[in-house]
Structures are given as structure tokens and as C-alpha cells.
Image (tube, rainbow, N blue to C red; front, side, top):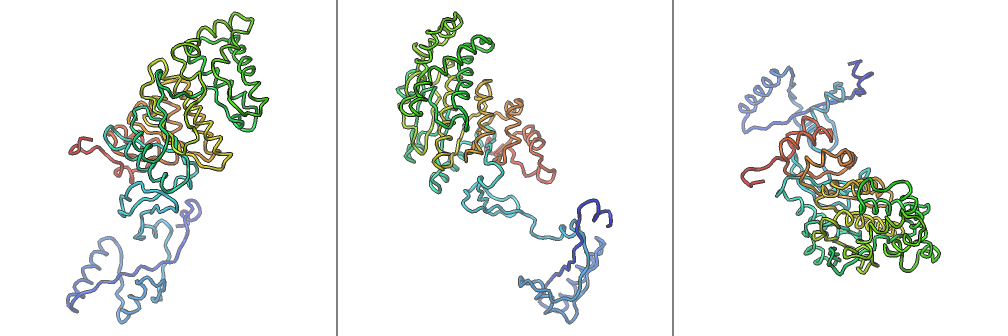
Length: 427
């Protein structure tokens, strides 16, 4: 006991445990009493009978908060916790939304992710387990119970009916779409208090390298791109970030003005995406990016545009988050089939940066995926998953359950509660 108190951070507490049992006759009561005492002795416990103290025992048990029995014994914290009947932790947060049912108490789980250390999270499950439905239910609850902004990246075109019903904006992006998002859109606070062009220049470098191919940009090309980015944004900065920002066409024109042959090579490499047939991100934004609920439908982006489109959409969302911070509004970001973003190096890095920074901007990211095995093979994805305070797990494959339990530090006691596929439902 001394070792428990000094080394194991236990406390010594006074306790009394009182049981009340009733019967229809004295004979039945005595028989039940003997049965209870016999059962207790099997477990090396001793029960005392309250002769002539039945009323005091009943008043002790009833929820008055009174102890009418003049007896106590000492127990350590660990020993006393075994006797506690209320072992289930209920989650009933103020301002929360419904997520499920407590596996032990069967009460509703109503959680507010904003009360966690960070509100970032993942929705995980095998195909057909209800991931999209769970995300839509959360989006609907947030839309109806809060005034927060909701942004969705939708690679499978699953959310337009819900977004339209909620009065939001569906931005359908493809090479032939009339919807355009300017890749060079930039808010005044883009640089997190510093020079926003510095961070935007880094984004343009990633964009150009994505367009030209990994490893194609050397030190000379990067210097030229940085110089042209600053020149393209100079008129916009002089106007106090008011009016229309530059586009990739202005950036392309700046490249052609440079005397270095490397600049001409870069301009020629990105011409398809600036003045060519895939110039959907080289024009001024013509969709309502101020709508409270926006779904970016990227299903019809081709193989050539998909990597660039993911970068541009993530950057557009980051701009919106910055704008909302200035307005004092919270932002929720939902990314369906997030494994698609992890398949590209630059979108992975941008997403990782976004995941770490959005907490400071009163925003939260939610990744939705079924390809958990692919997700766990990415070191970046594993880091994001382990640093997310909220994980909604639906039906899981046996191997994935084990990996998730190790990654999230789920105890052996809680492990059997992890959901498993139901063969009867085919999921």
C-alpha cells in the first residue's frame, strides 16, 4: 500500500459500500442474505448484515447524498474504482452534434469538436459502411445549428444535392466547365502576418513543378519564377490587395519578358495551362466564393488537370479560411476520398501544412476515406491521423482495426468495441 501511495500516484480514501435487497417474506430474505454472503466469501469478501439498521441502510443507498451508517474503511483509488457502478464516460457537450450511441450506457453521443485540443478529424470505414452518410449528417447538423462556413472537396460528386438543398454553391470544375477559380487568388493575410507574396511564391513554385514534372526545376528556374511572381503581384499589392488579383496569364507574360532562356523554357512548359486548352485555372474566379456552404466538385478533372486542380482548390480553401478569421467566423472543411490527395506529393505537403495551421484560424479539417491501408502507408497521413483529436470509425477490416488500435493507443479493454464488418449486411 505504501508503494501504491508513493510510487503509483494512488490516493487513500474512506469508503462504505451498502447493498439493499428485498424479499416477500422473512424466510426468503434470510435465504437471499445467506446466498449473497456465500457468493461474497468465494471472492474473499465479507458482507455484514445491518440488524435493526434497515432504515439507516436504505437512507444511505438512496440518492440523498447522506451516510447514515457509522462505519468506514480505507481503500486506494485503484481498489475503489472497481466498486464504481458508473464506469461509462458520457459525452453530452453543449452545442454539439449527434455522432452515435455509447456502447456501454446506450446513451446518445453529442460531441462538440471545438472543445477538443484541435477539431481536426477523420471518418474511416470500409466501402459501404456509411462514411458519406455520416459526413452529410454532420454537415446538415452544423448547417442547421450554427452559422459556421462549410467547405467540401468532392471527387465523386456525392454532395451537390445536399449542398443545393441547404442553399449552398456547387463549383463544378473541369477543363470544359464554365466555372473558374483563379490559381493566383490571394488574401491580404495569406502570409500569416508576414509578406503574403513570399508564401504565395512558394505555392507557385509547387504549381510550376507540378505542371512541369518533379525534378524539372533547378535553382535558376526557381529564381526566375520567384522574380516573376513578385512582379505579377506588385500592381495588386500597390492597390492594397483590392480589385482583381493577377492570373497565370499575367505570370506567363512576366516569364516571357525575362532575358534568361530558362524563363522561356518555363513559360513554354506551362503554356498549355495558361493560354492553352487546359487554362481553367488561368482565369479570374467567376463563382460565388462567399457562399456559406461550397462544394468543389472535381470528379470531371482529367488526369492532367487533377494534380493541379487539387492544389488550386486547397489554396482557394486556405484563402477562405484566412478571410473568415478576419470576419470572426469558424470554418469546417470536409475532404472526401482524401487518399486521392495523398497520391500527389505537392497536394500531400500542402494538405499537411493546412492540417497543422487551421486550428489557429478557427477552422477544422475532416478527412473521409475507405482506403485505410493506403493511408497508413503514408508517413504524412499517419502523422495527421495520430494528431487528430476526433476519429469516427465505422466498419473496419480486421487488419485495419489492429493498425488503428496501435496508432491511436486504444486499450485492450476497448479494442473489442471497434466496429467490424457485418457479413449479413455485406459491409
